[in-house]
Structure formats: C-alpha cells, structure tokens
Length: 171
Figure 1: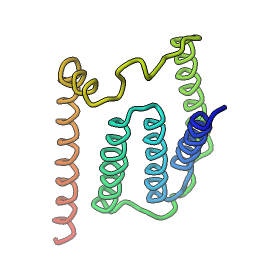
Figure 2: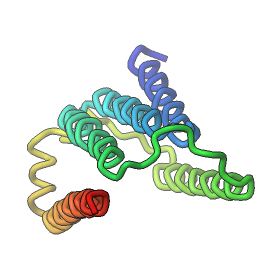
Figure 3: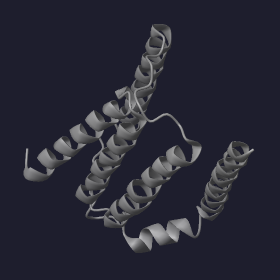
Figure 4: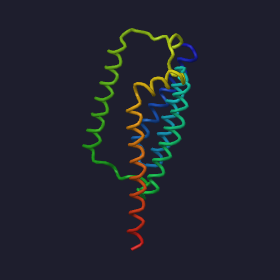
C-alpha cells in the first residue's frame, strides 16, 4: 500500500466517521459542523482522484454554501439547537435497518458494475475543467438549470418563512 492509497483510506474513514457523527449527535449545530468535516474529507478524496475542479466545487459549494445555509436556516427558523430528546427506539431501529439496506444496495451495485475492471485515471480526461464544462453544457444543461431553480425556490421559501414568524411575534 503506497502513500496515496493510505491517504485515501484515512480520508474515507474520516468521511464515514464524521458522517456517522452527523446522524448520531444530539445537537443540530454539531451535526452541521460534522457535516462540514465529512464534506471536506470527500473533497480530499476528489483531490486524490486527480479531480481538482470537483474538489474545489465540493469545498466552495457544499462545505462553504450548503453548511452555511443549514446554519443560517437554523438561525432564521429559530429551531432548537440544544440536545434533541431521544427518538423512540422503534424509529431508531427502523432508520438503522433502512440505512444498512441502502448501504448494501449501493456497495453491491458498485461492485457488480465495476467487477474487476480497473480505470486508469491518468489516461482519461476526468475531473478537468474542460471535461466537466463540456459535460455540463451539453448533456447536463437541463438538470443543472432545474437544480438552480430548486435552490432559488428554497432560498425564497426560507426568507418567506423567516419574515412570517417576525410578523407574528410583533402582534
């Protein structure tokens, strides 16, 4: 095992470990911060896969914007940020079973799809600005635009919800 493979395993462990902490912590703000750690580790994985542009997109959009948006939404909606009372045991068991089944399907699908095939990342044009730009502005234009409208609607909805609560408190 060389240094890159070791770094990949360590970053993967950090991503999975912080992902587990996101869903098991009792404080919402701590969950958002663990989410930032998990997404940062995924950005490191992109760097190791020589997808520098995807790593920067991961850092700027997901770590920078999404986590800040979650924290901003928590402040605007005045959601409880302290410990959340424990969920019923039946719900925890059901959520764990669904998570395990989803993980099994994803891992099984990935192993079945790849088989024993190896991909030489240096021989193909993956993760570069030119390759992503060509894909984004040819085959992925419509999903990209739909996603931008969805994010805009979410932002407008958050503003409307925050203003509605402010008016109720004044009366």
